[in-house]
Image 1 (cartoon, rainbow, N blue to C red):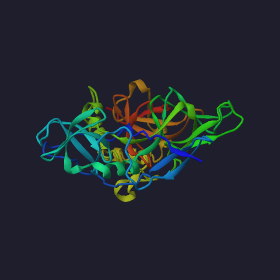
Image 2 (cartoon, rainbow, N blue to C red; image 1 turned 135 degrees about the vertical axis):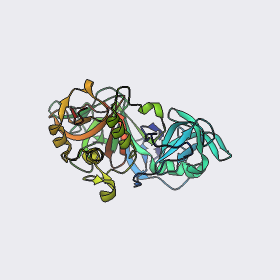
Image 3 (cartoon, helix red, strand yellow; image 1 turned 30 degrees about the vertical axis):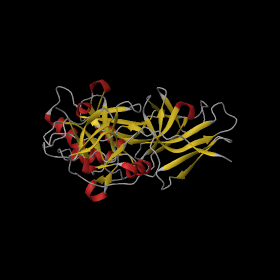
Image 4 (spheres, rainbow, N blue to C red; image 1 turned 90 degrees about the vertical axis):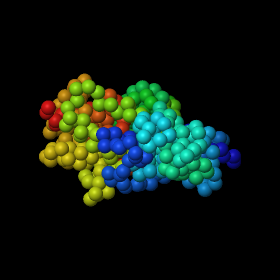
Length: 366
């Protein structure tokens, strides 16, 4: 029986950046606040064209061209690789590439600098912090995430692989947002929608997260790498107090670091979960009495509307059918949140409506 590799799409996903408040012009990379690298499993997806079933197998050691890139480079740093406007340590910082972010090499190494394009950023990085050539191609296949991207707005994540009205809808996902894939094909015979993808939603009830199912026709499956972000993409907006700005900038220092279910400290536990991340960040600014879990945090603060959110406020997600809360994020402005997402992504930035928020809460009264 002939098998063929399902085309891998190594497009760019929401990546990791840090605040620039503490940067000095001479830096090439940012120093780690808490450097806990973690592994991401890489898989090749095989499509059996006769029976149309998908199975997973480990990626081999042979050199493989990376779709989406002509000449790939990967950031070889623990925090972020600074992207500059000019090939000089005095050049203006215009963006940042997180650890393991992918880029297209536009101009190869010249006097220690390489011109790259990653996400919306085009500029120069120090060549010594960039993996290139066959080594980069091999690494890309090892670290890429397998995700399902919603190709419709309001994608329904269901508790079971069924469109029956009796099956609860766990959440609604916005078009273009991504979910981690647990199983790329679940077949249910005798149903109108018989092909489903098993996915994971963030949640602090279990280290795997909340397991759900989406109809396969409404998602696009792909392997993807992080990408660089422009500095402008994280502006807080006008009228933000110094306390809120400092809290958000502090939270950004931990972007890309490890998710550990039940963790509340990077140094003691090696990582944090979603509510543990909120506890850890808020504690640095004198808020020492926040409850431990996301549900308790949602009950204790002052409820506000999404239209009144300010950077530093908390946004809660969960089961939209029952109102059960199991995930929390910190609002950072411009319709973005920062949160300890899952074991693969760690701490990341997402759109406010990447899932349908259940509640917004304020603890900072300024």
